[in-house]
Image (cartoon, rainbow, N blue to C red; front, top):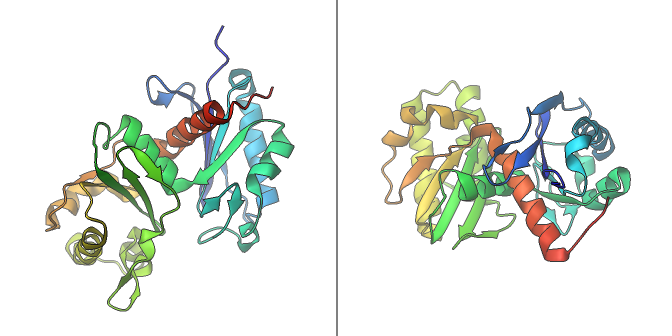
Length: 259
């Protein structure tokens, strides 16, 4: 009898989404559950919602690990930054908090890293060797770096300096919306950003994720860069799938087993 599927939970600014993941298929094993992110999104309030998601899928969980994504840097289970979530997250020992609350193995990772792992295993970066950089264009710019399939965690390349200021506020898709930029106008900013990134990192492939990636035909062809650049394929499933992959890998590495 199967011990169930690992659970992936993606914590975003507007919603907290979770689903058990079939790692053979790289797909949800059940319909995703989405619950609104609490208006005051402190770690405790978010943990309450994560517990609701876990309870909803309890029958498929058994001894399988739980992977959770957070929109911030997560180092050794501790949240170090909080760009688009409550500042109370900074310094929070989130893995311990969740493991105590759920009495279960939990692995907490940066949301862009999780999305990148999803794309690397099942999406646009599958089968690519060398250096692959995923960028998520949303409220901010998240990045995930892989070298020969190995994740270099917690990269914050959305914050590289361009023309003397942080790239993210001017270049994220939220800037396009806020300033009502046309795709060609926005593409000029993206061009500068990806040119700077490729000059620093010399990647073999860029993968572009985030909600706006579904409209990639409108802006990717406008970019003149030397690195191949492709849209992400898993869309908003990438974080949940990648979180489940990373949680499973951690469990196998550490031989953790709770139930």
